[in-house]
Amino acid sequence: MSTQIQAFANGFPIALLHAAATLGILIVAAALHALLSPAHDIGHIREGNPAAALSFGGVLLALAGPLAVAMLTSTSLMELSLWGAAVSLTALLIFRLVDAILAGLPQRVQDGDVSAAAVLTGAKLAVAIILAAAVAG
Image (tube, rainbow, N blue to C red; front, side, top):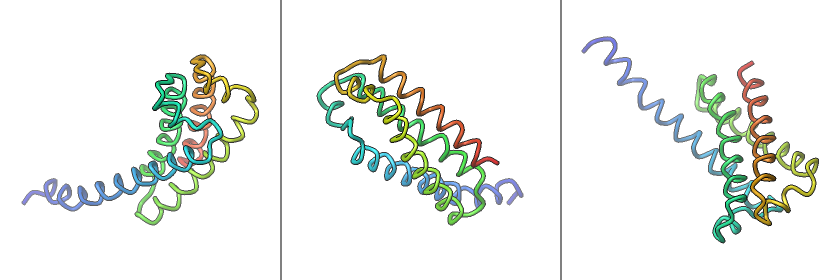
């Protein structure tokens, strides 16, 4: 067996494990956000509110960015788990702060204001870029 095939055979299961762990952290963080958010995006999405869908989609992207960098820079499942949990909790705390600073916008999202959702999404994605850079070192 060639060296490349052997390396793939050894590395692919580890890559799948790291991807699964990262997706698991993303799901838990998104669920925490949905539970703790005063906006109750999931209920509004079920009612057909496009602003809530845009806002929650932005949260998913904003959580995924730093998690992807954590996965990229981690050398073990334990390190990935630690960085993933730390960056997710940090992001969720900052997202709450963003919602508080931009007071009124979360309510406007609930009311279906897509422009408010775009601003909140942009702010949360900006936080995500900074967090991702911090993890990358």
